[in-house]
Length: 232
Image (cartoon, rainbow, N blue to C red; front, side, top):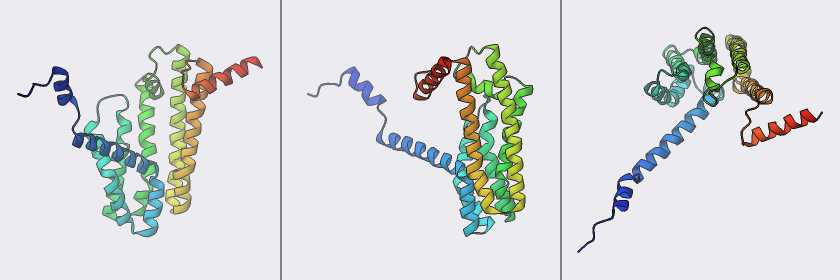
């Protein structure tokens, strides 16, 4: 006579994920990583695609890569504060679809302009419908922001709006010139370096000014920097 399984074993049997479910979860994560890298490497992919194929075939190849990500973003889009940022892959797909239909390389090169315009609209709108975008990011980590921190967040939201204007203008000039190599160099490298510098500068100086240091490696280094400055 076979003894019935105990309650713990029964719960383990019902809650343990099936092998197929684990494999599907891994594939989803891998696909998200691939699409994220693809969006970052968009200018380099465009450079390679337009160098090898016509604008139509280059756009179709990029569409095959970006369309599933855009559909996924639309399905998961909610009414949260960062909703507009989820439209970035959608804008990319619309521009690529138009480029494929018209066989127009200019529309492929115009994607960074459209993305900067979208980000400018998203960040700028929050200046008139508070809280500002940077404050919304900050509140994902800290709820009790001081008056000085609120002013800091608003100022940096304005700063990012200015960056998107300048960045989009440069991208537009390079796209209008039609020179693929400088376009890819700026949008695929220089623009990211500038964004990284702004993000790093804001994070370090916010921590130095307002504290709220955590236990992570970066925060520990910032704490040492603050202590060194205090001793001088």
